[in-house]
Amino acid sequence: MTHKIVALMPMRHSSERVKGKNYRPFGDSRPLFQHMLDVLVSCPKIDEVVIDTDSPTVKEICAAQYPQVRIIDRPEHLRDGSIPMNNILLHDVDTVDSEFYLQTHSTNPLLTLETVQRAIDTFLANFPVYDSLFSVTKVQTRFWDQLGRAINHNPNILLRTQDLPPLYEENSCIYIFDKQTLLERRNRIGTRPYMLEIDAFEAVDIDNEINFQVAEAIWGVRSGEGSQ
Image (cartoon, rainbow, N blue to C red):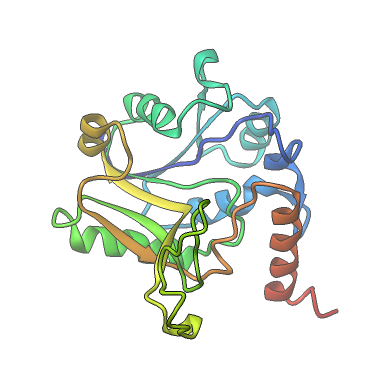
């Protein structure tokens, strides 16, 4: 069966910088990965949700609470932390057929259903003029390279940061692509990508311990628990 849109959420059992982060309690004590998973399974525009993992903990939770989610056992040769994500996605699309794929991460617990739906609607409305989509965060600050050279501003003309031409950070929250783009380019980002700007608070990605604490603080404020 070929789906219209399949959501992919790969995750490893081990984490180098934040031990066990994917299943560590977050916010309301749900494991971290469940926050993003609950968004995906509640999205009516997604036909199937797929988790690629080697984690027995994640598999056990999904078997008990998310029987509708398909689990792909990550093969041994794709379990090392240095393996590029595109290689893992190539394995996933070979396993689960779909016209389009949305990939996100378990480490984006603040991403909302509304933003996921907006991303899908935007991609479908603009395909194939734009062959892929990825989410970005607008940044307006003064950047310098490692040699002390100004990148996006003239040091002799001190503009206010809000007046600087914006740059856009790939925030790793959402990628949408078709199978052909991934297979031909071996990359989830095509030759004509649409950059979808999302709220900076939603875009917090947990890569280290301080990210985890910041994300929990934002979650607390947004859920109303932080003011109690």
